[in-house]
Image (cartoon, rainbow, N blue to C red; front, side):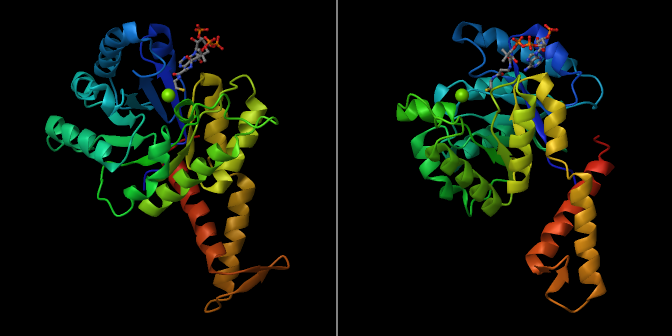
Length: 297
Ligand code: COA
Ligand code: MG
């Protein structure tokens, strides 16, 4: 089993310096951006630069390479896919995804371009960028979309769609509407059986805040998060990997069930454990071993 991507670092597609620098980070994936990080008059330049960086990539080592294209509604997505297609391209981030039909449009374009590649290009949509999209996430359930890697969410475009002047409460955390759509993305991804990828932590100088927020997000069930600055990568990788004490605890839970085989419920440290605790412990151990096998530190 391939471990999920923990850190996915955005890199503005029109910045030679950042493109160069990003390749040396320990991000699990880079997302070369053609959308909001690039000014409209530089979009075609960015497209060429990103295509060149993908083509120049030599060995299949280092971060996976992903590209954020422009939304289906821009009318440019197809041409962008043609331009950036490369055997080094691992996936596409689709912004402002309105629903499964947008994923189908991108998938069929990729089918046409790829023709039976060994490692099909994956798709990670941002599923909460309009009120309509956020309200209709259930439409992803019972669809057959094999390229779908996961779902991620964002608060900036949604607050613009709503016409809100802020998406934060006075104490700095996301306001209820944004926490709600975040939970909906987590539930929808789980129900579909794909990864839930948490959004960016915009205050990139606040590394301790990022650590706390990411640790909480990992415990809630997100498998990774978007990053905007190289300084965020190591903290994110660490936060979305089981910590030594999580692994030790999971081993004790599994051992307690093994020592009481046939029992649905066991006690450990004065607390009751039943089947969900066992499943959760097994999940922690399997994630830890897949990260070790993939040799990600
Ligand atoms: N990818 C690669 N390199 C990056 C980077 C990124 N996302 N963000 C910063 N760097 C580099 C800088 O170029 C700089 O390198 P240098 O010293 O060799 O010039 C170094 O890291 C330190 O950067 P710093 O000065 O701390 O930040 P900055 O002011 O240059 O940039 C941002 C701040 C937010 C503009 C920048 O981090 C960025 O562009 N992030 C990505 C934004 C994005 O893609 N958003 C879209 C999704 S929300
Ligand atoms: Mg945006």
